[in-house]
Image (cartoon, rainbow, N blue to C red):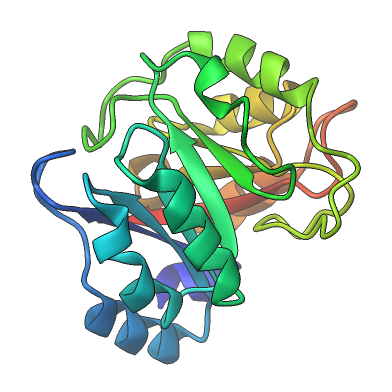
Length: 217
């Protein structure tokens, strides 16, 4: 409630099966209750080996569901998310080549992991910025539905998740990110409202629809 009152507009719910990433995260029932309590929408980040077994439960409680490109059946999971009328996203781990996203539909968001999935509290990887540069050059401007988790239009949404500080948020926006996920940096800020305002103030040349969502796991 404190962060919602500070101006946060979205939640980012981590979900792990304990195999793909370290155990932790939330279940759909808990997320449903918390979303109702705060009045904020959210996205589910499924760090699981079998997303097809999970997506139906999460499309029922989140407006956006993100699966990993490293997971089996991810493309079918994306199709199922879209068929449910929800926004779909695909996360990519730092060690995975960007070529894994070559066949991704242009209206599907990409979440660039800036730490190894499941290792909350790790240090932001600088190579994330060059990966954003590469992805920002192929944003899918001809997508039929340019809406995304950041509220933008006419291009692919690019997010960053992992170790994002206030400075990193600005760097990511400068390199094409339209939203960032922040956990400890935001929660530990003396003034979360000021943190959110500053982080959402995109620098010159950055996306005009930059947003911050807060990680919960």
